[in-house]
Image (cartoon, rainbow, N blue to C red; front, side, top):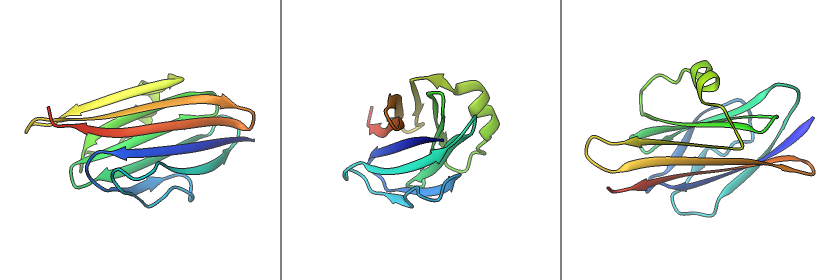
Length: 133
């Protein structure tokens, strides 16, 4: 069994609210510009971890990770369907992933994820940010 230490950082300008997780330790809210939040997940075999947060009422921030150092992150407009299998099948990458969504009114949300080995298993660091233009 591997331990994944997950650290999430929110620099979006909005509060992120958990809407889906396959693990109960994920924090329900991540306020903007606060210290990164962290939780541990214990997973075995080919299982994965996954969280989705609504960032304000603007976008949905999705992160998926596996025990073999693959990670995917996706930003969708809030209310768009989250098709977990498509994200997992098409976006999982070894060690790091990045995704952006440009807004119609200008500005861009970006999510960056890095996953690396530790003696206990792995560490995942993910940050969502917003740039006005």
